[in-house]
Image 1 (cartoon, one colour):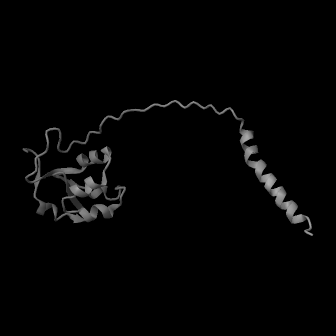
Image 2 (cartoon, helix red, strand yellow; image 1 turned 90 degrees about the vertical axis):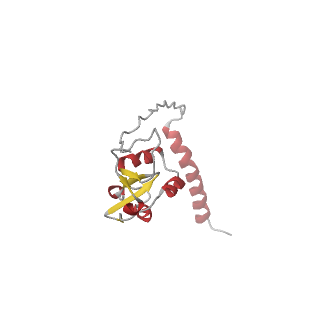
Image 3 (cartoon, rainbow, N blue to C red; image 1 turned 30 degrees about the horizontal axis):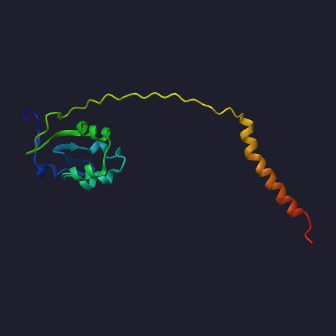
Length: 140
């Protein structure tokens, strides 16, 4: 782990405020202070896990791949005693290449637009006419 900053859990535990928020996920020490306001679940969720190992909470939620890639962006070091797997890189902020989707929409509906309006308005006119007739005719 040469060249990587190694932190102990006690060092991480000193950073648990809104102005200085660190946490550990999968052995990665993350400084998420700048991410607090952007977090989709709200800053409270991160502050509850601040200064601790939040791996279980992170994995229980089932975060997306893009959320998992953000770990690398906010990583500042490694937790003491943790070794990264061979395919894991410390501090890499490269975005994965996204697959592009293309779609073709075929519109088969040949009904004129005025027909849709008539289909909606005709029942309303019939119902309105009926209620007017019932209201205006004297009952015996």
